[in-house]
Amino acid sequence: MYHVLLPLDGDEDRALAQAKYVTAQPGAAEEIEAILLFVFTGGEEDTVPQELSQFKSATRVGSVRRATEHLEQAGVDVTVTDGSGEAADDIIATAQKHDVDEIVMGGRKRSPAGKAIFGSVTQSVIRSTDLPVVVTGSGTRAR
Image (cartoon, rainbow, N blue to C red; front, side, top):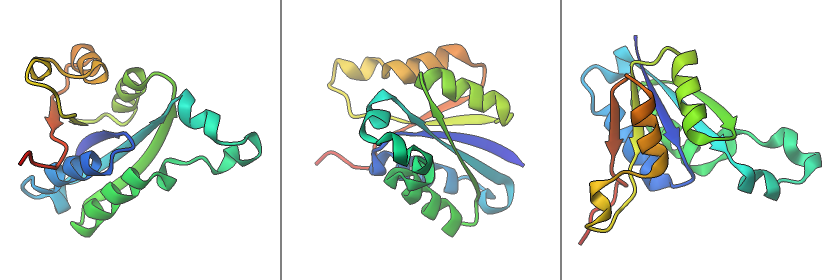
């Protein structure tokens, strides 16, 4: 089984683009297991009242649900996990924990000058791992 890690943020289009990359691989339904990771940062924790914190789950995030639906409809096995803290550190730790073969990051739209560099989380992940890192687009095309 080939294990891929999809670190997701709240953007549903990016999450779907990451999921579509996975399902486009040959033999995806039979050969790939996708681990979806959503990292809760301080911003999300501040919006959840303490008495409701037990309901904070990655499976409740729209982008995670959308990616999960796409992957499962294509027959890909899915595991959903979450983290809290520094996103790049959680991505690397999750990749190691699940012994993944590849990390599929979601790219953001950049200005022409910004296209020469990735976002800070993506850069940190690329520099911190020997695993292949694929960066997909947002899933939307410029007109």
